[in-house]
Image (cartoon, rainbow, N blue to C red; front, side, top):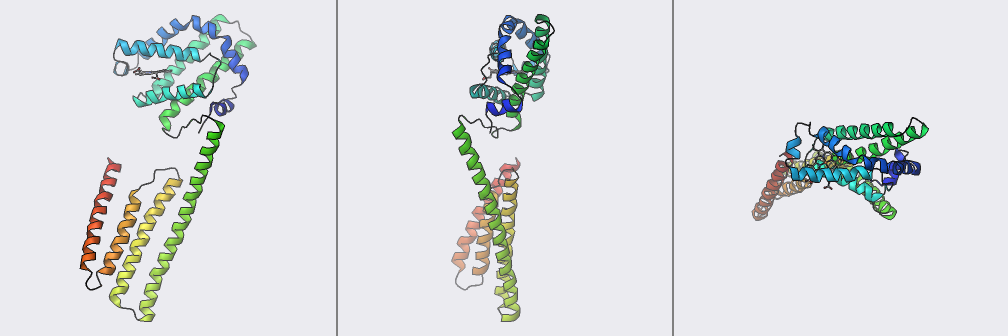
Length: 297
Ligand code: HEM
């Protein structure tokens, strides 16, 4: 979750930098046509230029949009709306699968173009160095945000207000704590089922329980331990930032049903229940298979 204030802080982008950029706005405006033709002849060298910008209509629209983006570099207003626009630019390029190297290389061209204009028009001085530093910061911030859309779609969230930022922070912390609590509960559940497993063996050895039902009970307990282990693994993956595989829950449900089938299979007159449970396991099995298939493809 980011706000432009936070990003500006990271780059040490101060009000003075914003002021410096506005001071060269007119100069850049004067050179904006040269900028557009230069950047376009640079972009047109890319192999896939015609694939991404196939006709004159799209190219002239793009030229217009790049020009606006270029002039906005020197507007002096860098708020969350500005951040949102940059994020959108990143999303549009990521959406058309434009290689991120093209954006980075073009940004490098833009940086050099601006440096050259400054060198040509402003005599060597501390002020010129200061202007160049401010230009570098805004170009780096732009590149950073645009490329972020390529790296972490969805993770890059822009909060509109401080209150929203607080709510989102609180919710993500809360959900993290819930995940941790779930992991601890799953560990406790596994230990309990494992104790059940040991108890069944103990009962068989010392209490004289029936051999057949003891085997079935042990098998049932093992099934549940296996399913909880799957769930635990998924939960740990989620804590590490991966996606949660919902199929682990289906696995657990199948294990619970299979356990019931094992138990009912020993009881007389339970064939109807066994048939229903068998049908449910079949349905869940199909769902499990379909889910895994869609994840792989
Ligand atoms: C510094 C680099 C670049 C900047 C700042 C930039 C800027 C923009 C902007 C502002 C838009 C409009 C986004 C919107 O709809 O809100 C856009 C769209 C687009 N850009 Fe770029 N661009 C860059 C590099 C490139 C390159 C290198 C290519 C291709 C070789 C490219 C291809 C496109 C295409 C195909 C669209 C969609 C055009 C449309 O359908 O209107 N861009 N770009």
